[in-house]
View 1: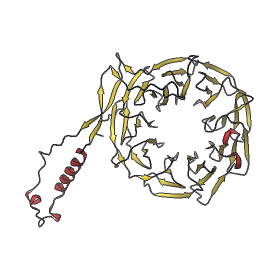
View 2 (view 1 turned 120 degrees about the vertical axis):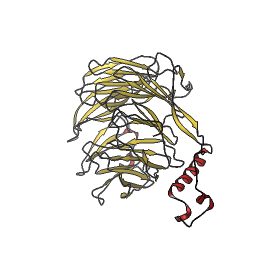
View 3 (view 1 turned 135 degrees about the vertical axis):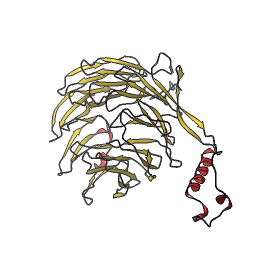
View 4 (view 1 turned 90 degrees about the horizontal axis):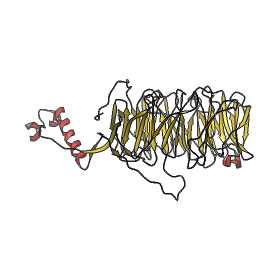
Length: 480
């Protein structure tokens, strides 16, 4: 893995959908860099600090959310002179997103007064009154033809289906929720999943015409659903709950076929690989290093600078070893055996939004694996094998896991913990990768769409790492 130099950033950074560009917020400026050369190809000046960046699906347009003002500015890469500014006036703007056709922008006003669809082709706009949420509650079909927008009126939650061609409401139906949390179309656009707030455990499956296909409730008392995710194949629906369990439903009868518990102590029998991050002190062994007499005597008559290339390499190695030996360690994974106790944090009972339950989860591209993080054990990442209905691996880190992301092209998982290292897992094993940039602590990461490049962020800078394509049978070593 090869890393670029660090570049400044003060906000969001993201790849374009076609992987050709990187958009970076630097205070009031939007910087567009080429992914291969990292040269600046466009520079746009906004009217305020950039809070949000989102590319259009065709990678031609990009919007910037200036939520402090509040205002939206959009730019074109192919027509730098073209500009667009959206201002809702006193209503404000809480969030903005692109439509699938890349020619409309949807904005939600403050206090969820209305959702507005703005056209870039003409001056027309469409209003939807009373959206349920600002940044949530809107989902598009994968073919981009329809949008499901959640609204609330008369103390009830509704789903409005809009055509993304004419932006007309095709239909609306009420849903059986106490306080709707979010909505998402299935990958094949045949069903819509809706889940309730944490106060009421309820997962509802609806058809596009408003028929309730299934109602799932694992338990009644206690905090309920925390996260929901469709598998890419559309056959599985994962539900993470506050009771620290992951439940997986099938698409045939919407019943659970797998329940995975996240226990603080893992005991046998267990076939999972357990990887624990450890520090290994570096031991210097310079007994085999040898310098010539000419180098020691400083004879500069026979060679330029008096030192051969091989001897200069040795000098650099000695300087490097002396540097890393001064309080430095090599970070690596140690394979451990069961039983193993994972660090557990009991949330206080008198504070809202307890840090417990499945707060982070995501499916692999092939829908075989899903990773989860129980927020009560933030240093452990669990990887489950859905084909065999068993735990595949646990990665135990020294620090809480900040972010994790699957390679979009193969079964490879990368995570970060706020340290200077990246951590990788594949079905073949796991490894730690050191970032050579000094004082660069990785707090977030993103893949580009073809899996060839990884964007990693520090507090005020970012860099990219070139990642080699990996066949499924390849193995990692801890020295990569």
